[in-house]
Image (cartoon, rainbow, N blue to C red; front, side):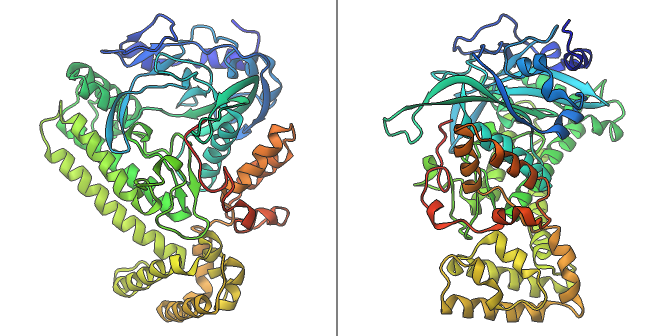
Length: 530
């Protein structure tokens, strides 16, 4: 056993139910292959030459039970780089499939992710996973590595989302490997050697819709039922309150409660995305968490100017399947894919119809309540007709106004707002846009109930962040990190912890996208190359 107190703690906290209770391949391999009739494949990380811990989030470390000085623990850093093995652990890559851009893609699996360990600490479950730790049996033609730019983006964004109050995976550490990785960033035939990095991400479970889909596609119905029952008992154990005999038997009533909960959580996640202007970019079913967590931060982006057709993903630039306005519908489509997979073992299709109806209801109500909160309006039923008209009028005008989504709602919190107060929010201010905004502001004031104008700011402040992780901010930090200056990265790490507060020293982070960033690589559109 390791002499590291942190590794000793992790060893004592091992709770490897996934590999112990589900079939897998236990011989270590990195060779690409099809893996029928299993849920996982044993796979150890590939060593890197000179791992250096760049940054870490201590609040995540604390949730895992690590010591306050965990970043100084060299043995732990070696483990987080993939260079060290935790005694008695079984690192693995999960097998799953998925629909990518609307088409079934067959077996996919963890091509760049390796789960190092499953642990339980203070009655909470955690999967600890490395992204970029080398090839797995599911890497296909890839090398299993990740570059610094994409690793920084995932490291920062997962924590930014958490502090925004959005369900998400978490980030523990960011490690520079000391090795170069060849990537063709723009898929234009000009690959370059880039800095390699590894992110350690943490979640209660990394199970995706695609874990179920691959088993259904292969007609492995016995294993599909085993896997579904396992996920319900492990990841939805709270259902025991409703079904005390859950450990002994699972019937259709349990399946109905499970699917309804997945639909409810997915709707909640999507409402939050729309609230802050987050665009995932790759809403394939293999990127959909069964727990309703935001997962797999690839070519994501944030709305600068309000553009419902915006997608940050260059691969999706033509069809814009995953554009901002389409995210609620895509999530529903993905839930239907999950239902189709589960229908192979659940013959009561009413379960799925009711679950999708619940998603529709929760989404519609959630979006309305959220939009009322962003505007400081009452969501009471007696005002619904009037408020819906005001909301629809605003969202119809916003694209034409070419105004910053985040700054607009923060400015709206001011007392007695007028169009002159919003000049700093416009990307191309014109007399016409100011007049159009003023007409809406007049309607807005009429909608506010007596005394609401002054009281609304507190409600609005909880829905409208001051800080979002704009792509250009991440890119500035990336550029500095490439040259060994981590101060801008640390500044962003501190700013993202308080996204709803105005902190003077972070004023430069609260600005709209600068002109130089509008068409700069990494600041507007991104590729899946990472």
